[in-house]
Amino acid sequence: MNNHTLANRDLAVLWHPCTQMKDHETLPLIPIKKGQGIWLEDFDGKQYLDAISSWWVNLFGHSNPIINAAIKVQLDSLEHTIFAGFTHEVGIKLAERLVAITPAGLDRCFYADNGSSAVEVALKMSFHYWRNQGQRNKTKFITLENSYHGETLGALAVGHVALYKEIYEPLLMDVITVPGPDCYHRDSGESWADYSRRRFAIMEETLQQQAKSVCAVIIEPLVQCAGNMRMYDPVYLSLLRTACDKYHVHLIVDEIAVGFGRTGTLFACEQAAISPDFMCLSKGLTGGYLPLSAVMTSNSIYQAFYDDYQKLTAFLHSHSYTGNALACSAALATLDIFQQQNIIEKNKPLAAVMAKSAERFIEHPHIAEVRQTGMILAIEMVKNRQTREAFPWQERRGLKVYQHALSKGVLLRPLGNVIYFMPPYIVTEEELWLIADVAWQGIHLATQD
Ligand SMILES: *Cc1c(COP(=O)(O)O)cnc(C)c1O
Image (cartoon, rainbow, N blue to C red; front, side, top):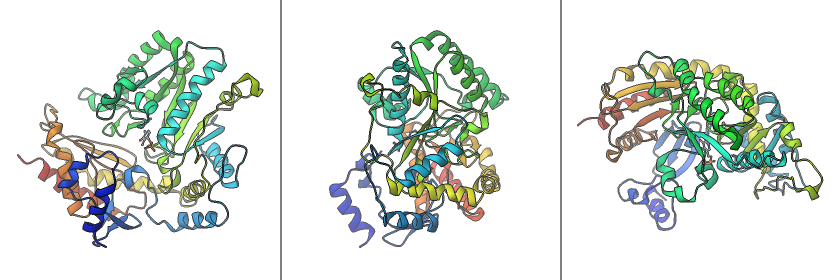
């Protein structure tokens, strides 16, 4: 078995996510044989440093001994069971721990099995809450420009990345899209906080005018990951929390990508000291092992659904794999690692090394910005540094960086012209320098001519 034969078998029967399959006529598909720590190894024996945590899910490396052991133990007692009418110990334990570690007031946990589904759950719960309160006019959602919340139709509707959304527009519900706080667009000399505050005025005005018809504002706290890793200041979240209370609108915080330490705190919300009405979690929740998601909400929202069956106020939403026991055991082991190894503190010096390794990018003639929030660092590659004119997307310069990095044994997967580092937390200082070196060479090659 080698890469070539497996890739051919794959291409005969498979259809891959987020991929123009024709690209694989020239771009070899890479069959992975095993993962160990931060390294992936293909069937030809070549190794790749997983600098993007396998699409932002992996936190503590592949084949992590602690998570492996927890899943093996769980496997011998219960792999999965229906979660309506039935429950299990790992599902209960995980909910208890999530209630304990998420911001105050998030005392209820509803499971689903992937990020998009968690977003759907939060949207439906918010809408249904208002309906149960007799508020039938609240049917809309407010979202930010450049936001991303997943690919199912409801989640896609509240997102705003044209590449994923535009084609499907006729299928999507109407939403209110507000210009966001993305600090890439701030004036020169303006601070992130000042720009974020200034941009909040548009949100405030929208809420003031439309709150009567709005269920909730949905937002990715601090970093719009799929939207090219654009970042903003926590002050926007504090202002938003206050305004949502004032105008009687829910706040849905999508921490699917940024939760579990990515922004430097366990949850991004902590940096604004806010509690949302709904918090969506997935990706890192199981350490990158198994699909699971959770929507955390308050007991007061829960109570609005709690009544005699005949009143038809119950939340009749389900997924077959809700609260999968193996996934819950992986999540519990992941939370154990956070706690026992003091990960949030240990990540601070790593984040500092990441910043240092990227210092030289700041002066590069084709780089407009290097930005960082905690364990996420992004490099904005542009045609013209002064005017910030972007490279035309058709030139696919990011793809050139991807290919170069692969040839050097590093998995980077740029978002358009944005190269970013989002490694598992087991990354070493040397590995961070390696990632930066390879990115530097890749950017050099991709920006010649
Ligand atoms: C990845 C992501 C989702 C969707 O999660 P899936 O598990 O891929 O459906 C939703 N919101 C954000 C912010 C994400 O990054």
